Each structure stands twice: as structure tokens, then as C-alpha cells.
Amino acid sequence: MLSCVIVDDEQLALNILIKYVERTPFLELKMASTNALEAQTYIQQNNIDIVFLDIQMPDLDGISFLTSLSSPPKVIFTTAYDQYALKGYELEIVDYLLKPISFERFLKASNKTLQLKDHSEQKLMPDAIWVKADYQQKKVVLSDILFVEGLKDYVKIYTYSGLIMTKLNLKNFHLKLPNSQFIRVHRSFIVNLSKITSVQKSRLYIEEREIPVSEPYWDQLSNTLHL
Image (cartoon, rainbow, N blue to C red; front, side, top):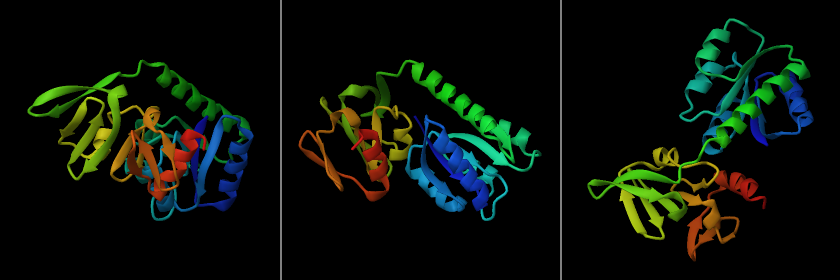
């Protein structure tokens, strides 16, 4: 499945794309909005595979929207204007759909994104990462990590082997971890999905340690664990 977001300031265009997503079995709609700023916030707080993104919008145009994301998902531009195509491909978008968009063309672009995801997942996942701690580079085995806690410009890595502290903010540390194995559940916590023993609405437990789960991250955690 590909989780997706649709962003278009025109409600009619938004409704058409919503119907296209509903007809596509491997797409799961997480959000559809005419408000680019609202969608931007949602994408920053959730792991999304693909964004169907209009370009000419008030407040925040599609190109600025894309370049503002530190770790953007795959993007398919959906627009009535062809003059942005070159810029779009410079930004490594998946496809560029000109309105009016047929379902066949929409499906072709979506399939292209699915193939890219499948190819990426076939690559060997790292079994360890290296972090600077105690004036040396330390190897941290991913399967040994229980959870990670962010403290301003430092992170505390809780492992079966003990506690490791490294000077790195939580957002940048998250980029080192495979999304299939680790998930952010709070502004200060990332957890290893395989180590979770129980879950409640506002907390989860790992090795009898209580980890808070904040509301902006609950839906993603719930969907990932199929709760």
C-alpha cells in the first residue's frame, strides 16, 4: 500500500483525485486538503509515501511546498500549467500530470510510484548504524535498540547493551533509521516497532518502560500496528 495526501486549492479538482484514489487498490488516502499549510504540517508529522500536489495555490505554491520539506515523500504534480515541468523534474518528482487528468494517466503515475517503492524496499537494509559517543565512533546494532529519546541537541539510545548518548538532534537521528523498523511516537521519542509489548491511546510499553504517545503521532502508530 502507498499512503497518500492530496493537496489542491480547487475543491472540484480535489474531489476528482479523491475518487481516483478510491478506485486504486494500492493507494490509501490519509488526507485531502485545499489548505497547503495544513497539509504541509500533516506531512511533516506523518510518514507519507506520495503527495498529489497542485502547483499554483494561494499562501504556498506547490514548488515552495515541496522544497520546504526536509524529508519529502514522492511527489506527483497535478496542474493546469505545463511551464513548471522542467522545474518539477529538477526536484526529482515522480510524474507531472496536466489537468484535466484522466484516470488512466493517474493510474500510470501511481504505478510508477509503487514500482519505485518496491525497488527501494528490495535493497538490503542496514543492520547497524554508527554514532559518535565517548569521543569515538560506536557501532549500534539496530535490532539491539529499544527506543530513542531526544534531549535538545542530544539523543539517548536505549539498547539491550546499555545507554548510548550522542550529540545529534532527534530529527536527524531518525533519518539514520529504517522507517519499516522505527517510528516516531512523540516529539521526544522514537521506538523500535518490534520491541513494543503493549499500547494504549496515550502511551506504549517497551521492556516495562512507559513511553508517551502524543496525539499527532497516534494515527500513524495505530495504522502501522493495524490496531
